[in-house]
Length: 182
Image (cartoon, rainbow, N blue to C red):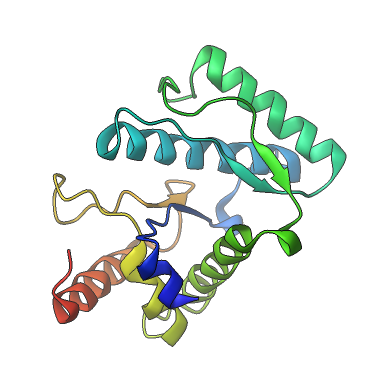
């Protein structure tokens, strides 16, 4: 798996949700839509900055007919109106594709990467070996400041991982300095 991340020049974009800090009105469906919105924003910014002449399509793990429909409708809304932060989706096209993760190596790779990130945050362990193999591939725009890691969003803003998030950024920098990457 990790050889594929490097071979394919993968840039991971992820949202970590601190469920202990969520408002009560965020049920599963609303939380899924909000998380998807945050991923869309990261994807749009990445394509606009790194590949401005390209477009992309989102591929999502098939969950349930109701949730997939809800996500597709929200995607259409974001395309028409922009995201809550005002970002216009100019590089993300069509509706998302929903696939069974058992049939898609790419979605399985995303699932494994997401689990590694989830586990590191759950345990507050930047030394978790599989997280260390995943972390160098989390997107970092080289034109932005050293303290930013654009491919990683922690939600909500009042999450409990402030200090740990700094450890993650420092660990990523350390890992990349060992390999000579950026």
